[in-house]
Image (cartoon, rainbow, N blue to C red; front, side, top):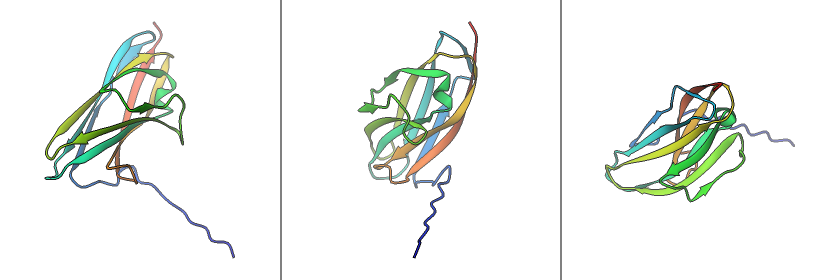
Length: 139
């Protein structure tokens, strides 16, 4: 007997009480540093945890993460399942907002896009994915 299980992941499984904004740089030049900002709001009356902020490998094909504030607990140097994982493990108090700033370095000319995915409460498919795009031009 063969059993086939199929899992389809949506771009957003809408964890209750979570709001995410991602502000990517629309453009930069090769050699230029720019900032991508992620804002995560916990609108629940209970504490949560910002587990990770993950970047699609397609987006980071032309940009390199130089610095993250606050500093991640762990930062991937190569993609896992097409994602560069930045494990944060930052507490989110009830009603609080956490901002994470990523300094990106333009490394290769091109039009780069993909998702920035924010996981909360240990992951387990509690996430919101936001599409991002940055055009990197030759210097």
